Length: 98
Image 1 (cartoon, rainbow, N blue to C red):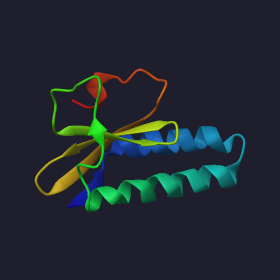
Image 2 (spheres, rainbow, N blue to C red):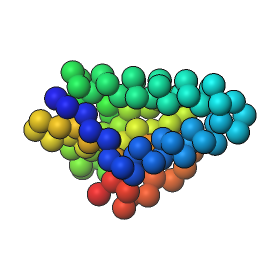
Image 3 (cartoon, helix red, strand yellow):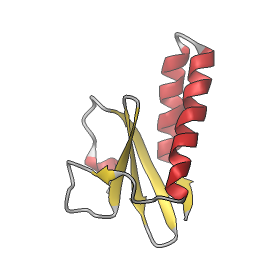
């Protein structure tokens, strides 16, 4: 299975990294590398994430938890799409994932 990042999700990652970089550019770069590496596991285990609590009826939508962040993704037959990345404490805007 191939993992594809939406432009929205990539922008969210880089926005978060820019915020982290206010304290440490090296930590921001490390965080970006780590989150992309973490998501690679979906290539082999696309269903390894849990159901999204806000939308339990949507079996195609799942999430991984990476540190304080939720990585929301959608699985299809041959691809997994990363839809957004959100801080765990933020409300998840449903329009970002549906």
